[in-house]
Length: 67
Image 1 (cartoon, rainbow, N blue to C red):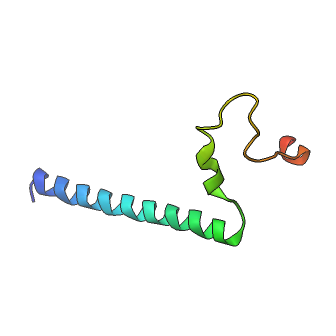
Image 2 (cartoon, one colour):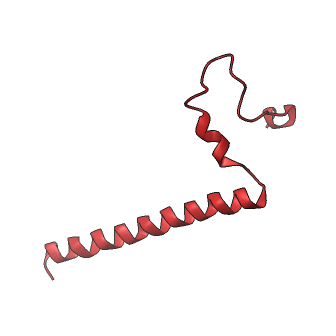
């Protein structure tokens, strides 16, 4: 087994690992949105509504500030 074949196996393993990570992250986003834990779609407008006087995406309670 030469170094080129080893690099090929390592590259394939890395691509498979990254695909598994990507799909698990997508599953996490959709499942937490379906459960009602957090709505990630409303964060899509952060780039559009980024002025200082725009309403925040999510209110932060005083309990969460003190953590």
